[in-house]
Length: 113
Image 1 (cartoon, rainbow, N blue to C red):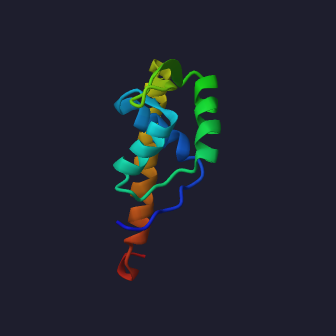
Image 2 (tube, helix red, strand yellow):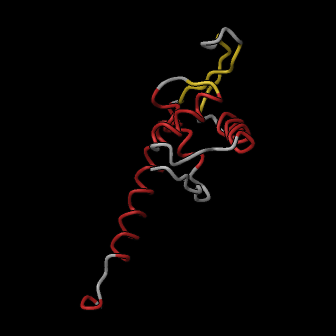
Image 3 (tube, rainbow, N blue to C red):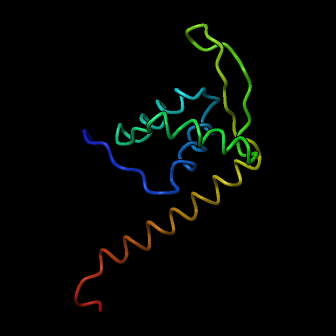
């Protein structure tokens, strides 16, 4: 893509849940995974990520455990909880409905109104 896109309000949590659902990740790994799965279109600032991780952990949507990272440092790895899986399914369904409705509205032609 080449250009990064701005996140819409309320989408960061959903993207974090998706990234962590793929495999356990430490904080910086979450940033890299979101960048990867978005085709380099989304670049999350660390100042936004860590408060969101804390919020999701506090709400019981992700769980954290300390482990060794790939560069032999202690890192907090995040995994999705059962509640996190449910929330991700719900948010994905809601997002898909919204995208579909906006797509329908934007593709309306003058003949259809």
